[in-house]
Length: 217
Ligand code: AMP
Image (tube, rainbow, N blue to C red; front, side):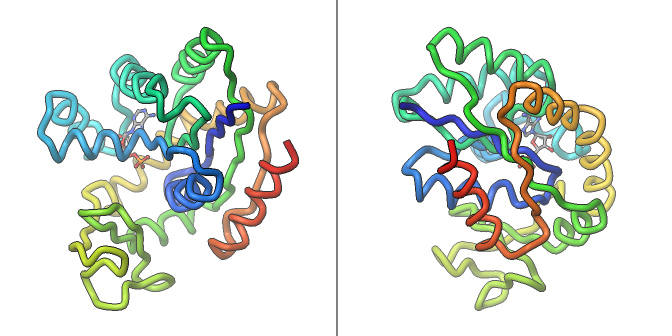
């Protein structure tokens, strides 16, 4: 049976980190809309250039292009057994489009864990975040620094600060989260698939909780 998990939580909650670990453990693809946009941007595609404006301001890329991009990824054979979704859906209309596309294939969102983190913690985490340009590994300058400054432990690639991790854009991203994305909490709660997880603990502890909620399915 396929397993589709939608990770919810504010920017900086650790959705990407946790999604990568879950994807490894459950042998499922990690589908991150942010990573898909960053990949388009790197390749300078039309979609990438369109997304850049919204991303730089901390706003959302319009629903129609976002939905097409993610649904296209989910319909590839690699997602037949399921997927760990990170950063999508981010609006009610995206959630409805996702449900519709999945229903057509006889699938559904099985679980929507919500990783809870306070606003202060979000700002602290994101402004000190560094990402690897080559493999996407994520570091925190204080809590999870790389062994060599500016160099990825995993692949030796160069580390950089995402353009949208500066304090002003982080505040906009939080505002966007409350306005556009937080209604999804009620949406998935009503469907009986929401599970709350305390995100202000170690990466390992949060992963253990996520495993527990998935295994309890
Ligand atoms: P993330 O890596 O998930 O923090 O996403 C980075 C940026 O990409 C967001 O701040 C948005 O501008 C854009 N983005 C990612 N996912 C979505 C989505 N589902 N809907 C609209 N915009 C998105």
